[in-house]
Length: 585
Image (cartoon, rainbow, N blue to C red; front, side, top):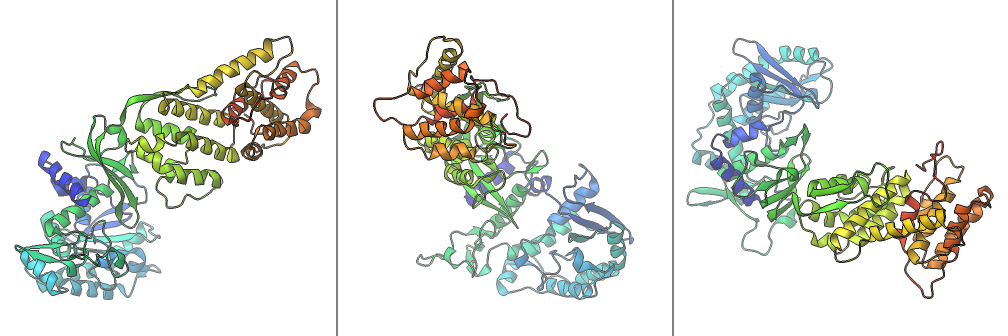
């Protein structure tokens, strides 16, 4: 994976020479919250305070300078700090980073700060081991001159009181960074950054080998291999590590992940996207809606923890957000405010399914290790998300329909059953049914349109109840379940409860094993609300007659689709008005 991504990163630079690697990274580089101060030769300071979620001005020379200096001064990770006690977090003689509490306590410079600074600059003068010395020597680095290190240390030490005043003026109280920089050129910062990076860029120099004068090692980027993770080491093979790359490639790979870490759209960080293979657009990284030409791409999903890691990677030989065959999300139930229609992009289909079938709970739980129940996410729905998300992501993010096609019937029905346990409004059930019927029609195109079949039966039932004068009876199983759904909805409308809980419906229906259980369920509710029903209500009497007269000759399956359709569709018995404080809307 890493080698393929690195090849595309280098290929992009070849296609767009105006974007060298550092320019690409800096274009998306994000400054962490903190106080940034540039110490000038004349004793003055230039200041930039970055607050959480702050928006920095574009094309600002000072902001751009700080981005470059910060980029070239940042550690790879805490375990690879210059300071042995990890109190100073920068990497060269031009910069000094520490947390607020390390710099200032009780309104004054922390007494131990000077000790930390002395230790940090002493560490800069020491090469840790022979391997590091050899790597730096091979790259043409001469040892740091003590005079230069002492001069930098002296400037930082002399500025501490003035910096403390700046911290207090900005009223910085949280544990954000205080970052000090000497006013030096970009080339000097980049050079000293290399002095830090090259010996530390690999996971461990103990894995390094030299081939034809080049040092090859295990990349530290997106790769964790240490004494705490011995299972990652190859125990029986001739080589212990998964792969090795050159020092130059390791530096480029770090820059690639820094660049990926800065990817945003509309001010929000991206957690997934696509890198085209071969010919690139000026923006190498794309979201699904931006891939409008069928092409091979690499799909990536990130975990934004302490460091950015790619926790999902897939090569897609032919991907396009635009679908070869669109889906028509039809409003089979005439559900209010249902925004269906013809959708021909996977990204739009994903958003529609996420909203109307999963109540906005699917996409946000694609990648969590364990979906946890909340007030808005019952455990039953959390379980269904765990069971269905990989098949849906394979289709909606990678274009592979095979996993979801084989289980679309079970997935959509089980999600709807789970939704009933926390259903706030009846129309939400109608929206979910519309999605189910539309997906069944899309994937099982050789069969009848279930939603349309039930809709026709509903219209026939409506005409029978409203217009037929003679006694009525049930003509089919679909009509029976529609009538049961209509009756249950009518009974619910008679409730005096301030808030209705539809899990009552779910428990009775989900436990039903055969027809008699369904009949017992609606009869139970009839007995509960009979006192509120007008004995001369012709609509109710006809609907009850349809439900009561159904007696099939043989056992048949329970048609939950027709029953839920009857419950969620406009009520034929009596138009339902919103109840004060109730949820039947």
